[in-house]
Image 1: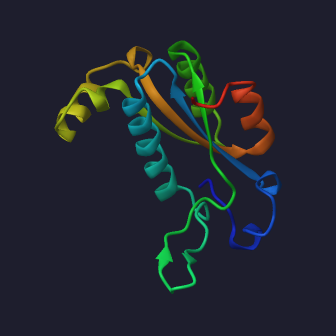
Image 2: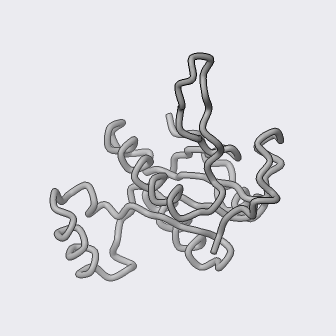
Length: 152
């Protein structure tokens, strides 16, 4: 299980002090709407699966609650499709990384069971990815994503 232990959650510390780093790498060739959708969907899967990722709710001066955001930050990067596939494969090979991906089939079907069937009928090396969300130890994640640019 990848995540933060309660004792290491420190929302008063800079994001770079967190043991784990969260990145979402998106296919930079996608139109803005599809790229945003891919990033959001992989982030949703990540936030549900990685313990301690979200901070406490913020409450404004009028008492309105605003749901917690990632206290350790999240960086959204861009890569070409081949680099994205390589990053996903390397991340998935590490036991100390959590990986959530969005195969292209997710945006080409309108019914979830059709998406499941499409992925089931495709060999792993034949899947194209629109986004990959990765949480893991800071230095190895930094080395994996290298100098990828922020998603523009």
